[in-house]
Figure 1 (spheres, rainbow, N blue to C red):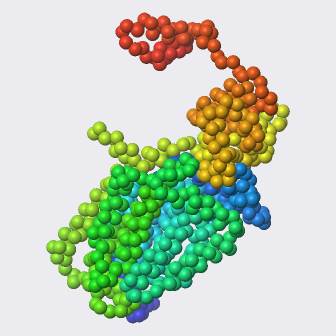
Figure 2: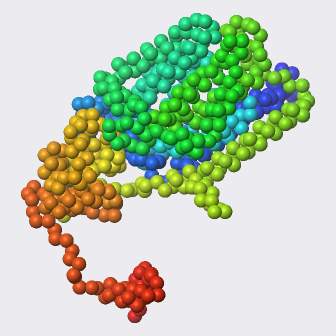
Figure 3: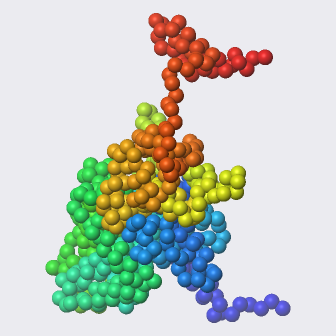
Length: 610
């Protein structure tokens, strides 16, 4: 016997259908779509290369150190001793991991993937959550035309997505910062303490959240004429606790001070030549590299409008916050991973505050409670011409932004225009296995079973930025410097200057100095670099090539000076191939230049004939 459904069940079904037809349901679908789109874009970019993306090799250091952490922790041991840069401020006695929580968060990916893939998958996950957190904030505070703003986030800057794909901690910085902004907006100040504590353990840019709290306190103080001490107090307490209750205390404080002293400067006045990301953008570069973000910031300023002597809280916050990030780009390119998305947020919240009807003159707390209802526009069921025009304009802008984003990603190579896309730039990254053969030799054995380089030996790496890759492949040996040249300079300025003189080939007999001052018996150089230094080492009679391929050279320092290897003489007999090329060049000298490659090809073809 069929039983009719109860009457109290029908309204529930009807309510569910009604919900799916609401604006709220549509916005939720847009939110899910945004998450999927962001994940797809970042996955596509990350896997344009087999290497750990992008630009530098720091990601190899991070994932190798995370694996060493896991080896110790899984065996019930304490944190491993960092022994690979003993001449720097990261010596075993002074080492501090200022990415500690980031490295812990990488560990679960090592459970399922080999290290390179683990770093890449982790980078996609963290970057996706970072970009999505920006999009979520727009959703949370009822910003209209979500998909248009999603397109703006995608198009904000190529450099932003380039840096988001690096297997580093900055995506987590964005996540922590957005979470902190949400707690500020909601006045859930107590949550700022654990958030700041975790931030301190994750990355040395944790003061960013402290500045955000100060900005918010200033805005509330202006609007409500009271001292809003809680956000500053909780972030300060979290900052102090995170630094004091720290597995690397007090070395973490020393390292933070070292970073501050060497990096917080005006202009490009670094005492040591550092990575390109630490140098500033010029005004022209900002306009050409960040057109959408710059336009968003400009429009944010235009639409920013205080009313009745009161600041629109959220818009005012982003005005001050983004202005600081924008100014910071004249200090360092590294802020390219923060300024663009927050510029989009500034414009979005300024426009929302500008379009919002003037609120009644009510107490601030009451207005904040009824704000969602004030923002909601009641639909009459009919759209006016202006409504259609506004929607058409919004979607047109979204289409333009989407096309611009695709242009930035894929590039354009038609009609005489040759613009490289971000995907092409990433695909041109250095190969994943670069230096793998050299490091396999360094950790291997000779025909007698003896180590090619004894365990515990120090290798004089001629370039500091090679260290992450060397460390990834070879943890049996220590190195002279790496991660940041300032680490050696801060520990021993004279030793750093000597290193520069050696690598710039200003010293003829450098081998004894390398052995005595740096404690190294082997020198590692990229095959494309330091050619003059290598030539002087070999000519001095103090060194010999121990290993060489098309990517790297490893030079062994001799215990005693010997006669240098004689140079190849120019008067050696010509080979048949060389004679044929020279004869053809003489015959065609009057008629124009000869194609030497074709001559070699013809000669090879002739030799291949039976």
